[in-house]
Image (cartoon, rainbow, N blue to C red):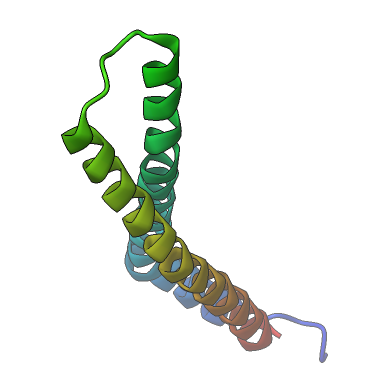
Length: 105
């Protein structure tokens, strides 16, 4: 009798996950992926500028160089924020799935 699952609990949990939780989780996942894309572009842009300047495709500009250094610094600062955010998001999701499993059993 212990192994028999309560189908009403499972149905309520599926509805809650489908309508309420998946929207927020999907938003956080997309936000995290977008943040990582921005960080990668902020870090790679100065490298691309150096390559373009060394190969002669573009003339050297102090203004662009200063902006790219600021971009690199911002990307480095955002990296630490995104790392913490992603770690906490996955820890939260893991705990939520464990909680769901406990409710079903």
